[in-house]
Image 1 (cartoon, rainbow, N blue to C red):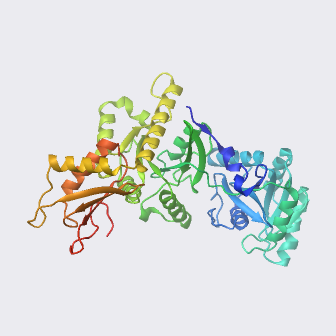
Image 2: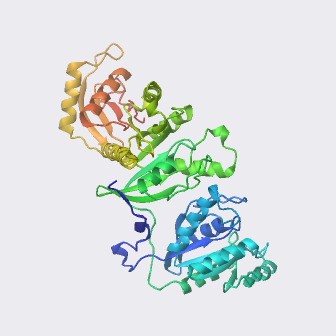
Image 3: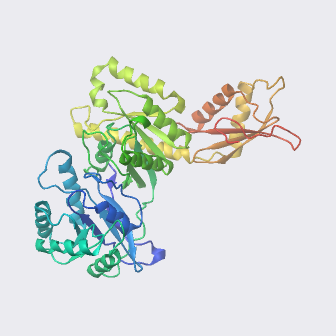
Length: 483
């Protein structure tokens, strides 16, 4: 595939206007589960970006943030908890993600529990970090009072150098920790933002639909953890990507369950962040398990994104599992079209990680190319500006072909049309009466606009306004319009 993963762009220096030289320095937070790594990450970055819960295994993928102290800034990476005794399934994937963070780090914060003291697992992780050869700082977390500070110094027996007792939850000694970090980082490097530029493409859907699998296939590397366990992804992961000289940002999101199925606070937070990601993106790829078809929850997610003015591409994922079934495959495609008809001409791409032909690699590349091209097409349609003259030509042609029905026993006259906004397109029609168009005629006109300007997979909003100061019906109602 012609696209390539560009995670290095996450770690570039400041923009030229800020004048900061050199690449950003990376500080990785590493340790066993439930020692407070994510709490420390949130404290250093002064954010609530990492989900925190009093149970092990909450963080899984690598999560990046910016820490600033004393006018210096650097990149902080939160990692999942390491359990040396478990090296299969999900713990194995978490370990691989942590190892990548260790390899790219300029400094490692090895977090231990000041209350529990150093454990056998800490000793094994310490050996792993020692072999990496990277600068290391041991942080004894949960040192909420002087007694626990003294207890935290027991981590000196790990033989990994200086130990700093801190309380990430309460901010105790965090200033001293920040000073120690800056002392160990090369001078001059800065980090400005981790928000990459480009068209933002969010992969959304129910848990276990294959969102992370698709993202990894596009990046051609296991950047986000994939597991058969539903709900593996917790935090939205922003991944810069270069495709056909276009800057894109692929965003893997947590699966959205039905509200009554969301039990834990952690799942609620993950769902809220997925919804916020949808609000901040340009294109949503609705990933649907082709073997299960479109469910009620898929429709809810699609409607939520569509009503928020987002372009939508529907990916019938795991298509390789149904494509050989003949009638079953045709039924799955027709069911998807019918269930998502409210999206008004959605773009549906049949996708799978494994190619359908003998050359699996070529098949996979072709399918991913189609999906990416569909995303670029809908992104362009979302931003499309239609000239006023062309829009009025189409309006006049639409009236000639099908005159609008009468409104309250009075004829409807349409004078003028203009595009008031894009992303999504907003068309304003000036008429002799406000809110005078029948829904059927509005749908007819919008279909003409879609066909002529390729506005497929994009919500098109139509507003009809009455003309003249004395008109009591100047309301801005209409299809998709806001009063």
